[in-house]
Image 1 (cartoon, rainbow, N blue to C red):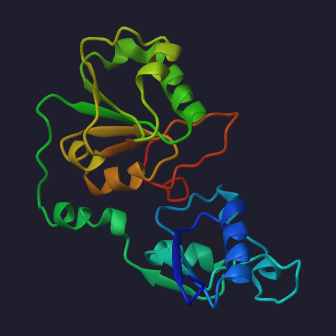
Image 2 (tube, helix red, strand yellow; image 1 turned 180 degrees about the horizontal axis):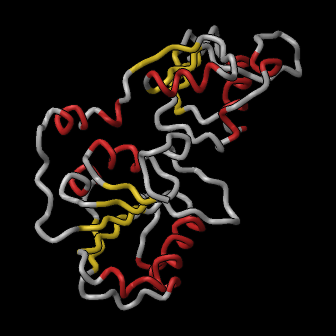
Length: 231
């Protein structure tokens, strides 16, 4: 149908999004594009940050296709997107983080008796492999911890651990497949590079450890906020 449509998509400002908007406006009758910014915004994720000239609404054929509304994931994310002067910018709930409301209402979170360090992988295979290679020489320092390894849903951890030389797993290591929301509350600390899990871990009372690599941009969402993580 070519009738009026609301088209909702996850906003990361990638080229395919611009192609979607351009094609939709050519072939649909009065479509409305609602771009939901669904996760955190690292300062170094440059696709989110644009020149004001590019975000100025224009009918010029070479203008950047823009959504009708950018829906920001909370107050801080909205303030970051305001720097790019996106047209139709509004604030909405952080749907992914709703489960944290209950956790934040607790006065005390019960942690595992033996300290548990959760190693959280990201969607970036190269980054996740770098984290595991960073850990490999330090294995002897982790004997007193339970080590839980949780990969991104789209990135199995077994091949990465083998490539990093952590195979077989030490006896105190365990690959976990549960939802991250079940693993964070009992964990003492979380080792995480570029992932929103860093923010969730902070809310769950975890110590957040962020590895820094000289050959990679810092993509951790806590990087711009001093005092919230260990580097």
